[in-house]
Length: 212
Image (cartoon, rainbow, N blue to C red; front, side, top):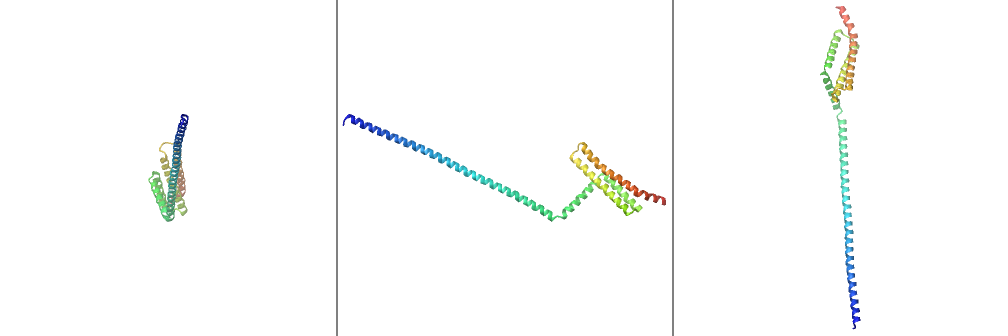
């Protein structure tokens, strides 16, 4: 073979080797890129799917907790309503007796007051004089109505004073007005009762003294 032919064959061989190397490198690069891209996409998709699954599981847990809370609240409200209904239906006599006991406690609390003791003293005197002077049934009715009015107003006066003292212990014009108004109501009733008593008992006393 000639030198030119040898050179041409060697060049062709070298070119073939270069092309084969380039194809190998391109195959490697494509394999790497395809592997990286597939790995990234698969990792992202798996991460998103796992995150979505965890989010769904958390939402389901929250919904279950909310439903259990609402069930507990409704159950407690129903049980409370049942208890109230049972108390209202089963204990009709007990609240009435309790109200009477509280009312008697209030009367005993009022008896401890100084003004109430004074009113009770005058009440006893009027009853004694009424028995001695033999007043009529109508006059007895007037006397008992006045007794109840004065004693009841005195209890109201005591309650108002207690409430005012509970709200404030400082001197305030509104507190003074409330206490003075309650005391004034008792005083008006006492004055009217005294006038009525004089109208009833003065003629009886004059008749007794004339006989004597």
